[in-house]
Image (cartoon, rainbow over all chains, first blue to last red; front, top):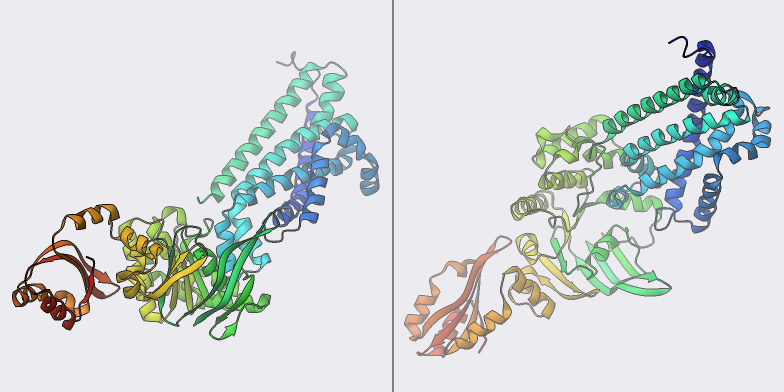
Length: 221
Length: 335
């Protein structure tokens, strides 16, 4: 066994795993913080919705589409000046977070919009008929009813961020992806590659399982 | 009291105004159960949604208890909606909340009830609609009838003066429909609540309504007390609804009538007259022989009625007719 994994520095792997965890955790947090209100706004300003605003919807929708259509590897590079402006550096774990959020937030916003659209219109109408204002409709009816869908969206976004975070190794982002590229690919250390990939697979599995459980917990249909 | 004064509603579709409700004036009295019957697309949904301004009228005025609601601002609108409860065909309960939380929801939205008030009101309403044991269940664990009972309890939570029912029994089986209608009638009697009920089933109107408006293509084509409209329908649409609710095939009926001999009369009995042994007596006194071609004895709300189609042969028809009319039976000569 030891002979097969000669190049593996377990301490290095440990730190890289921690870095990936931090990158995914923080970028997921910010993606949700930005994407949730953005998704709600997309939903509300959409056609035949509560705050129908075709102009606002078009602008938001266009922005989201632009960010979502740029391949993440390109987004990483395009975001470098912005990242330097916000964080002070484009390198390391901290430098990877702005591009990850730029990729994750619009993605999550679309998922939120979709799950809100799946809420029965009749429920919105009933809540309106009870004298609710828009804020009460959002927090009292829409978000609780869409909760299982939104949590499923968080899971999908988290998993997408794991793969994005791995990519950020290309521009010096750190984490398991960085390790895989620097050692596994550039130094031909296949054992390091296998271990990092295995860890990423396990990470994604755990995320999916946790997400599924939460969705089940919140589903009352 | 709800007054419609030349109320009109049209929707903009592709730059053109499509009328959903033509200029309509009518008055719904406080404390009555008012039915609006019509086929889908007749405009009854629009009409009922104008009362709590889920739809804004394109023209005309709507007054609730004398107050013009048409130009209400946001605050007044919320106050109005607390005064007007609404139940729906598909119940529209929040699947993420328990039965008790669903019923508490409008009170929480109103924001001026204490937690203790909410708890006791919810318990009271649960008991009223017969769901005392189901407080902590989620809507998905209930049957259709139970869901509608939760809907009714929720609509009553803020003690409204008006209850709007949007096809409230259309998704329920006949037996459940009966029990929900009975609950609505009881509530109307106990609380003096005005109920506006829209439906496509004349039978629902017959069971609970005091007055009815019949709608067709965005217009009210007939309006009056349920017994008048039901027993003596004037407009073709109303006739269709009445025949439909009595399971009468019109062409079959025409054939039956064509084969019968003598004069054909339709007799309508209302109230006490329904139970009197009138026909035999009239036959003896006037010497006419009769055969019953079709008949029905039932109730309109709480009033019994009977409607018989007879063919009369021989004897003195004039004596028979005047004897029937003297007994306050409505006589219609069909042939």
